[in-house]
Length: 448
Image (cartoon, rainbow, N blue to C red):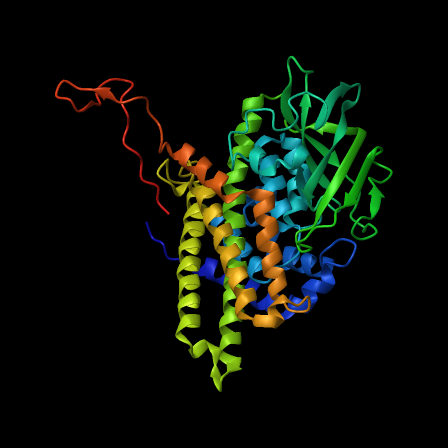
């Protein structure tokens, strides 16, 4: 294994960092989140058109760059460093991989090129705020996470010209502006209920009335009502969607098997977790860098506070945490690209549990670094005007959306088989007999 980045990967990071340093400072972020879309649309068009950001992990046959999860994770690390408000995660890490995995040839050819160039944005709509469960990050996604056919969630019924969706979903990433909605819905009634994915072509993003503003789905989507929700982290825009007999089409051909949908969601969760872990690492790195710069300048008792050993120890601990989280995020992205022990190449399997474990470590690191950044900045760190609040809010909201951390770690242990096996059987010599089928297997090592 060669852990060094290629020159192309270094160039992606370098170019993106230079552009975001010029165009996405703290003041620019605060201004962008207060616009109706919740992000700078001109900057997004430049990132998509000039750098091909949303198409990094898409094949060239569909207008993408032809890279993989590693390049997407490196880009997300830089967007996280700038706390960039954008539909990148929702489009490139959620909607596009599902369309690529399950969509018919017509659906892929009709949607992926526009998603790759940023002409369209997309998102995954999961009812009940169950995004982490749907992506198999905090538990198996083969249960009733989407409503189980009971009241609530989103229900789908066949119609003469396709399907109709009825229900509601909250905490949908970029849901108030996305033009392509991949909706998880139940069909078949309670006794034969199953979860399938459907496509809804929403209206062109034109802006709602700001946080809490309402807008309908446009003349082409009757019955779709989208409301931008007020969130603690304004840089991660979320929306509430209400669907009242909204026309939709099944993602893929035929009825599709629920097992195929669960597998596609789980595979998408691996890529999304690696991208989100890298993004959290970038945010933590920016918070630590700003804090180190501040303690070098802030003087107390006639000397910079960074010269005090207690402050140096705290910063050193944060640095060690950050480097460990960065290594885990890079490994998860490398493994998600099919380079894990399951096989090499794009068709290889990812390391079981690596993505969830990396995400847990990154979220915990960001939470710790952001809290220490607020404390070490002293009184100014608590003010609304200072950028420390951006990092702290991102840390709090990401864990609420994708965690909690202990469930991510429990899922990683389950996938890695750490606690597999049955009861210990006594052997002839009084020791455990490991020859039978119920013998306890030794725990597997998990690379971080």
